Length: 129
Image: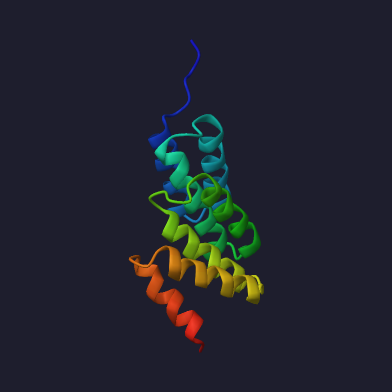
């Protein structure tokens, strides 16, 4: 009998376990497979932000992280994680040395998500050092 693939939430749990144990490449592969098999599910949407966070904070790949944050935001500009993704995108731009783009991203974050906890951080960034 054919073995069915894990459910979306099982994929996400496997990826979380891999990332928690420092197997970041494995986590990214699992999350990519989740998006491929179940593209419209909540775990798949969450996996964009999780993948980008791993790339940004654990693997020091800000440009790749930004690409994935952008992919999430292009699908979910008002999604549950849009403020977090916008914040991550701004951090990724900053860490990648894209200063003018980062300032524009901080400004957009402060304006678009005024009620978000990320807006205060954006305002601090815009105010300077």
